[in-house]
Amino acid sequence: MPNGLIAEDSLRVHPEGLALSLTLPWYRSLWLSSVGSLRVTIDGTEVPADDIAFELKGVRYTLDQLPDQSDVLWYLQEHPQLIVRREAPIALGGTHRVEIFGELRLPYMQIAPGKDGGPGMYVPNFVRQSFTLTATDRDAAPPALVSDVPPPPAATDEDPFKLGLTLYSASAEFRAGWFDFDGLLDRVAELGIGPGIEIVASQVLPTYPIVSDEFVAGWRAAFDKHGFDASSFGANLDMGRRRDRDMTPDEEFEFSEVMFQGAKKLGFPLVRIQSAKPELLRRLLPVAEKLNLKLAYEIHAPMGPNADAVLKVRDTYAELDSPLLGFVADFSSTMHSMSPTLLRAVQRAGLDDEALAKLQAIWATDATMQERQQEFIGYLKGRDFDPGRLGSFAHLAFNMHGHVAPQEWADIMPQILHVHAKFYDIDESGLEPAIDYPELVRVFVENGYRGYWSSEWEGHAFAELGEVDPLVLVRKQHDLIRRSMRELQPA
Image (cartoon, rainbow, N blue to C red):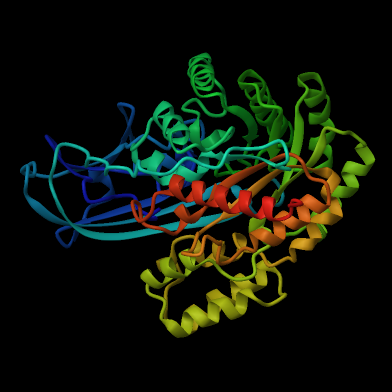
């Protein structure tokens, strides 16, 4: 999805001057405290901060108040207004040159914890946009969707895996308002995807981290309508929710416990956890036992099953010795090359062929993620290229793509409770060009995995909105997985 705060329909008429309808430049909801700075230029003149107000749900904040709003959620589908005071209001249909700069931090992506009670370091996201916009009073209409997709092959008892998806796959379209929650589930059913449904709580819950009774009622009605199964509840841990310090251990426990209770209300058997700190797990395990929830720590790029950090989790699991503890295998860890979708995105942001080749060469080394990030950022600066032009992806190109061998998953197969079948592209031959799906299917079948494979299209992180239909791609990936499974079955 575009890493943007504004779009073609963002400039709005307003009695105080003008307003910009903002879009959250990320794929999950964030606390307003995540916004560090905003700057706006109109027709070549930078607007003084005192002439800008941020309005969300009818409440106005000055820009310097935003970092303190750690209890105010900017829900993914909300479009607050950035109100710019002017001597006279702009006219409907008038055109203006608008430039915006924003700096955010991602409160669950910690680079380093805080010291001596101070705040930690978190992955930043920089947004720079410049458009000539026409003033309007309404949102742009969503495009028509493809409907003539043939039905999928029927699942059989011989299929070793159940298939489903995480609704995260449609992040950009959900953020843009092309679907409400019910409409998104209707679209999944229309394309024959399922039966497993996984959610990221911070993305779909308007009352995150709390699951409201209203959300439960809508959820159950949709599941009764379509015959879906709840497969995995994705729980983040917003350690950097406050700007002045990280969460305390008690706050981490309380935040996680609330989400466990919500997962149970929705009927999920499993929670994907982000943190496996030993003390936190010791406190959470009795909660999981009471609620009969499995807890699965996600192994995600750049780590694999035998990374040092994961080995520590395995040691903690051995100490706690509970069948409720396991892992989510995310196939971003086991890529043989960088995603073409990512490479196209950074090329659009200004990287030339030499820089693209350098990016891929650095990615392929065995250096640590941080070392590779810093080498690439240093390379960009050495060429007088501002890494901020890439938004968060000067960092996330290495976080999101790992190159561990697929065979390593066999080392922990009995503890793999759920699979994120991560993918970015499906090419003309029906294959994922950066991830060897037939080999992954072979490894998991031969080593006895029999749970859900939840399709997770993450191309939205790099593709432009409307560039592809992600749910049609999920259907194509399901066809690839089914084909790979059945090629291993006896004739």
